[in-house]
Length: 562
Ligand code: ATP
Ligand code: MG
Image (cartoon, rainbow, N blue to C red; front, side, top):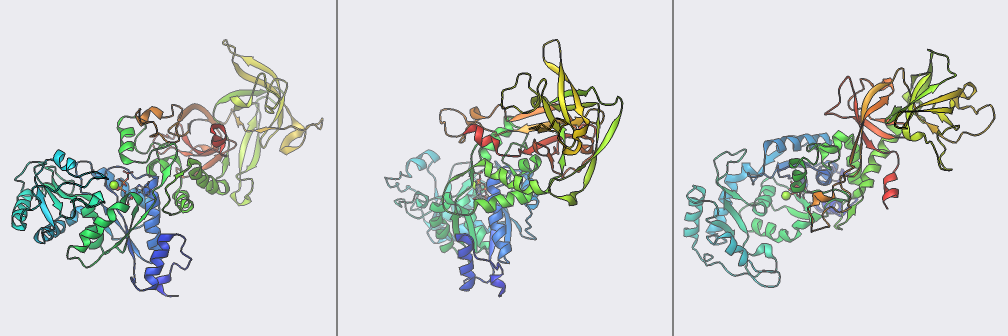
């Protein structure tokens, strides 16, 4: 097999097919892609799709993927974002090697290419104000109107452009525009702005520049300077492709990458634009960019998602040109599918009620040996203490249960996982009339799953922890961040109005089995019957662990809300 075909597998999407074909026909013998974030926010799961695609195809075809910061808009950009983006890409499992670039490193070259366009009569300095320019751009049905400055000579343009660079004009006084066609049916070709004046220092180039190139102009040239072969971007840039090609066709640059568009990832019950995510952070609707409810990579990481589960999600979502909205639950099934076979089991009672076994030998504790995984013996066993005092979940008990409730109720029986069947003999109440303790008896003969002496079936099994050995912890349960599938649907209200007020529930008096003390920060557990959990990287303390629920055991949510 030749190196070029080293993917060794059938291309699985239209982009891989194009690349395979370009290698087979010797159009390229080596492919280069790039992931080009603007450092104006943290990466989200939509970016993960683009990262997995760009780094994924480069890896599979023995090519290269560059990480390029598209940093041409200093007002919104920050070094914090540059750092977080690198961390997130690495965490996802990708490596750019030495190929880290910044569009700002190309400012001088971009300036020279602009002068080339000016000299060729293909760019001019426009001195209309922003408002007039907007009005004269025309509409989808009407052509635009030529600027009175459109016929400036190359000499005059080049003089003015040099003065723009030298800082002789205030913001907005002039812009440099491409001279294409004010009547083009594609509005992107109606003399797009290439440069504007912004007297703002840049996080990398400092005060060196006061004119900054715009995205459409910068992006194609940056791609070409890096020798990118396939420039993969989302569908909203389809109408920009003629401009991408126009710029490269009209400057002296040997390479001409091919732009290919694919549909962006949309997820329901969340928002995925950095502008909106920034608003959530700045207005304190969430606990920072890495709030476990955020669709950011850092939020998913803190929530307990693994890099593999996110890559698997990108894989399942696929790459097409069809715009659609993916259900949040399909992201959840990726982590569930990974953790079910791998996560050791543990018991935690997150909202406890006390149980006292009145017929258990006073002051004694026995040791039960239980398996860490019901289906995987290689994961070993651990020891649990069992004694007179226990905790069970408050909602595993009902005073006045409906017929289909098979857990504990006055006079009723239930099996404790890995232990005995117990019968509730008496309920103790507090002054407010709330049950505070259940006095129960246990049936010795039922140990290890054996039936009670009367032979009757016990229908439910619940989890528990021994009160003598339990540790105190906090457990955080998360739900969808928004109550609406599309938080942006209602144009009459700000999207924050549809934030889900119940998206975070903190259970601060949880009782955990002692093996959950001092666990590895990266270790995920299945808490029996409750879901998958991992320590919160920000708030957990050695003296009081804080666990985040990554995901429930089943997709109960879909059933309730549909
Ligand atoms: P946002 O609209 O969320 O702010 P953006 O497109 O402005 O995102 P960039 O930093 O410019 O953010 O994005 C870097 C790359 O990630 C681009 O190539 C972009 O097409 C891609 N990307 C951004 N959002 C998505 C998404 N939802 N699905 C797939 N790719 C995306
Ligand atoms: Mg962008």
